[in-house]
Length: 443
Image (cartoon, rainbow, N blue to C red; front, side, top):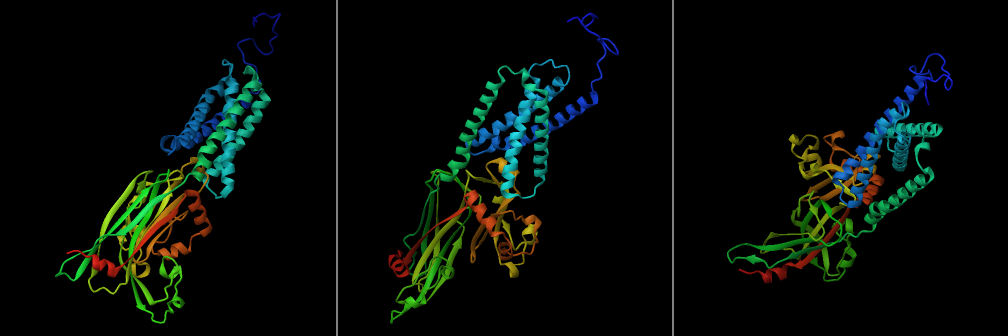
């Protein structure tokens, strides 16, 4: 059309060089709001996708990260499309590109709000999710009013294709991320065995080898959160009446399991040796094994009836969570130079402490929850303890003991997080007769 042909075009207030006054301030406000929302959505998708795409354990989780990064790329392409659509409209699909970016933002923020509602923990990110969700709802309403899909050939087929692809992807990724980690088995082979004792005719003691072994025979790599081996010596008197069954002890008293014997009386267990098998924070991959040999020293005239070796550790599944490197550095509770981990030994005892951030393998959940921390305590006399919670040493009093800390935890949260991250204990024990060991002693 010839815009200068007065028979075809009637100009009011100017000619073809003058832009008509169609409420330009409103158009500029819409453009500004669209750009702000898309920039926020771009940043959100990059944060969501980068951690999973770069460091997720499984291929499916890395694929999820890549999908979010691609969504962020769409948001980036939609930025100039906003200017074009509310400007000269030189690109035919600019409106459709803005619509696609808006739909992605609405879907992502809806998912994030749904995940947040499961725990309803107040976090600053919730305000961002809510703001972007409200923005995407407003932007979608505006784009529908503008009928931006008019530039797309066969818009119904396009919409149906996008919907079917999204549903199939969601089902596939949901199976890989949620269902498979739940049903995948975790299995360890563990051994604690006493070897042949060594002694000398002039020596008042004997050396008893203790062989400790574990192997990950399951299909899931695991973190060793805390571990311990303890050798107990049993003292008992012979019960001629056979009434020892009336003196049974509960598992809480024995530290292992309820037990009783008819011809044993006044049974006591003493710790002979205790230590750590592996370093907390180590990983044990499928098929990987670890073994060490310790030497237990006993006097030849020992009064122990039996020796009982117990090997145990707490393992966290790597397909559900990732522990920060900070956890691997031990803190000693009795050294004041260790800062927030200090506690007077008279009040708290002496513990080796490991503490660090633990993150879920799906970054969607990390962004919708308060930070979670894994803490592990080891003491040669008091054994081990490990838990996951929102408790953070940096925000707590320096003088609190492990017992005060544990009593102050939300146990419902602790149990929920243990199940969520697959934190569980595995153990094995081996008991031998001391008299039998003395007979086997070799010079």
